[in-house]
Length: 310
Image (tube, rainbow, N blue to C red):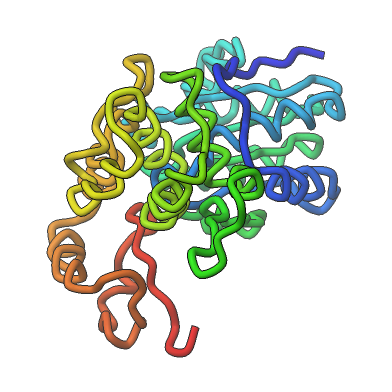
């Protein structure tokens, strides 16, 4: 049973509930395509890899990871998948046809990562699922594929502490967003811990960063040089502040600005103009306040629109 998934450098923190939900979905015979959606930096890839690793034993032919981040042409998606699986298309066969022939009898979990910018290739995923009855596909994407096969799970931010009822440092450290901040903080300062003195600052950082894993990791990476209190005070300029990340991360994840900018660059000019106008809102906004054109935005940008009263 081959398991061809990327190794992970750090443990997954605070995602027990989400992993259980994804595991249950992958076990259901009626779910053949499961898409994890969410904002940039929310942790879709990390969660999907861990879920696939846990589920791989249930598939006779294991699990395979295909990173589509560098595929710029939707027409190349099937070729990229075929190459990753070691499938060489024969003469007069398209990549999709070659994949169908190769996967028709395989009991396989196929993880397609970063699908949002090649979403026009979604019908090819549907063709594979229709022809290969034992194939199951797990996708990460900033927007859904919108296929009849699809079931979606929205990846939420990490749970943040309640600033109105702050627990003691030990209990606070167990809150998922805080636990991630501590874990990444200890990677640069092994002695870092939540104390009675810095507890409120750490909690406020987690809340102001909305429990977004990428932002928390970038902030925590500075605790060796800057105190949590100082980090908290500088969060008004978070796109400038949150810039230092591991050099082996993808470029779009090395800064918070890059993560948002990567999505922004994939909007049409009119969508970009709308996105800029929506910047007047602080936090959530109602769809009615945003106007009807907000529905034209693709799912790539992290807009927190809500319905009135929601």
